[in-house]
Amino acid sequence: MKAVGDAEQIAERRGIKVVLRLPAEPCVAEFDTRRINRILRNLIVNAIEHSEGRDVVVAAAGDRDSVAVAVRDFGVGLKEGEEHLCFDRFWRADPARVRTTGGTGLGLAIAKEDAQLHGGWLQAWGMPGQGSQFRLSLPRRSGAELRGSPLPLVPPEIALGRNFAAYGDRDNGGANERSDRSDHDDELADPGGEDT
Image (cartoon, rainbow, N blue to C red; front, side):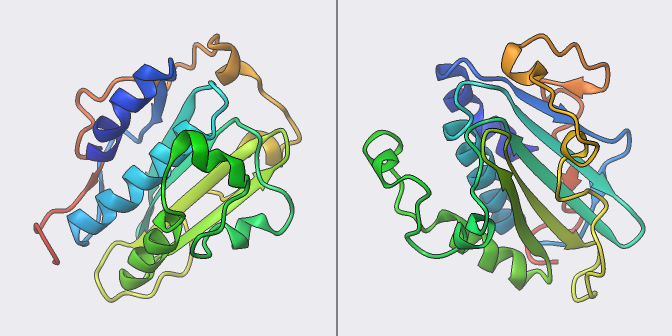
């Protein structure tokens, strides 16, 4: 994923690893590469900035009709109702953060518009003290109706009632997780170039 590579320097400066959970086969869909990379880069950089020094997990999956990428951080999380507010222009969970992380407050609003232009969804989940997860879901074929997502919005460990501190402790040892990009740069691939 190009977006992971773009965010790697920011993560390294903060001592954070971006852990990839990728399927064995690439998730291929028809989309505007520039716009989708912009969405993913925004989600990953936001997760790094809000991770409170803990690792960020990026998962990808596909089914017959759709593909999805979920970006998970283990930071302070979102309060109830903020999962919708976070897509409003200029909204900030913590207005004081502008002094340290910068940004205009437009990134998620633009990302959501880009997802909708592709017939997709950009959704958020968060819980105070448990972090947040943002999920981008897209139809595989341009113009097709999106009916579901191959990834859950609520992280599986939360849905199962478990709290894993493994990523914050850097002692996760997950067999299917990757913190490098080799052999996986095309996971959410655009087979036809720009605007297919």
